[in-house]
Amino acid sequence: MIEDIVVNLSVNKEGGPAGDYAVSVASAFSAHLTGIAFVYDPIVPVSGTGYIPAEVIESQQADNEAAAKAAIDRFAAATDRAGLSAEPLTLTASFAGAGDQFGRIARRFDLAIVGQAEPETTTVDEIIAETTLFESGRPMIMVPYIQKAPLKLDNVMVCWDGSRQAARAIGDAMPLLAKAGRVEIVIITNERGKQDEIEGADLGQHLARHDLKIDVHRIAGGNIDVADALLSHAADSGADFMVMGGYGHSRLREFVLGGVTHSIFQSMTIPALMSH
Image 1 (cartoon, helix red, strand yellow):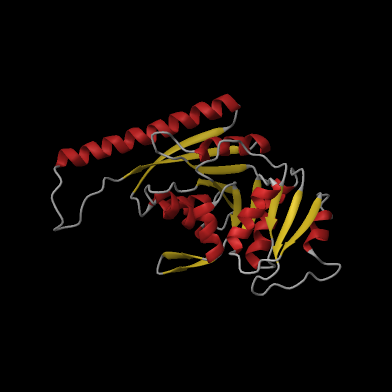
Image 2 (cartoon, one colour; image 1 turned 90 degrees about the vertical axis):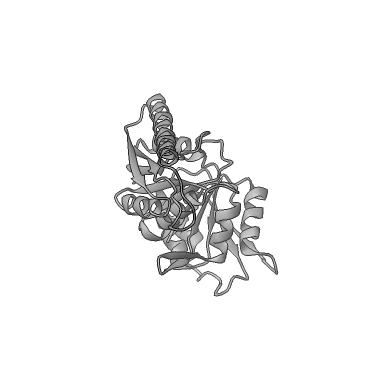
């Protein structure tokens, strides 16, 4: 069950799609929604790289506080319109520390929702998404920065490679899959370690036993990049939501994304639930 959701609210001037999308997810499940907006610490150069007057730092701080307040105000207005049980929170963090803070907070929720980082902008959204994926222990929905539509589950695409991460993502996504009009299991047949399903114990039969409408589609990947194959099929099939495992590892507190996960982070076109 999805009863308690947390979303990272964009503090960009225009806002971001994650907040509105989270409202639509919470509405679909009558869930409580917590929105978090970060007041980022002013950027101060390290010793020896230059002097920034105190008034400039104070101006940065004021701007950051105003941006967080605007994000909270947008969130409050959206949740009021939707009639949701909601809680806005403003937290202070450095750009580097926001990801760790949000990831730890997300452990206390059923689902975390974050926005995809926009090209040529601050990497803080990417840091938050990566940390949430690897450190929260919870499923995460990433919302493309181009997303306009609310939650739609007419055609859900499940990416299956037989891995632990994919199995975890599918299990975490079951409340969403239960609301899906159609579930398509997509398998890239030449993935490393890929083997045919065991007759009588395949994923399609498993999900069908949950009263889901299932189709299975195998793609002969050839030399095409796996992420490109998945995104191309999502576009061709009209998928409006994706479920996939999140791959990678942490090394000295730096996250190293797997190739497919990294490509999806950069090039995703539909919302995706990921679990690690």
